[in-house]
Figure 1 (cartoon, rainbow, N blue to C red):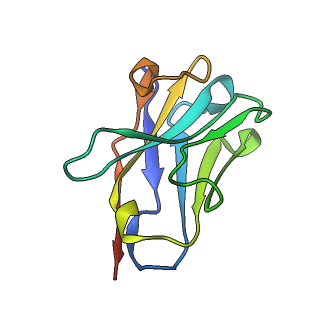
Figure 2 (figure 1 turned 45 degrees about the horizontal axis):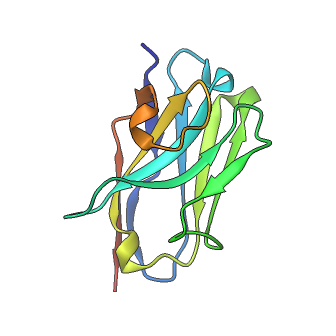
Length: 122
């Protein structure tokens, strides 16, 4: 199976910015639509952003619209999540996932990374 690895989590202050990165272990990332998802304490998994394999389709969850930007560089086998104006409620474990296309439900994505913790303090 494709293995995904997220990098870039950490502890930041509210209002700060942070960028997460994700790569596929076998260099196959360009073949997949990619999504970012998060698990916050006591909440169901939330879809944060999705991007098609060639980058021409992008979707954002309502809670992050205008603050987060998903992008990809297929030549570098990387997908990114730029997070601006971070809030305490953005605190979560963030996962990247890969699928054959953008899916409406997160459960349909095929491959998942190990997650990276983002903590936003106030």
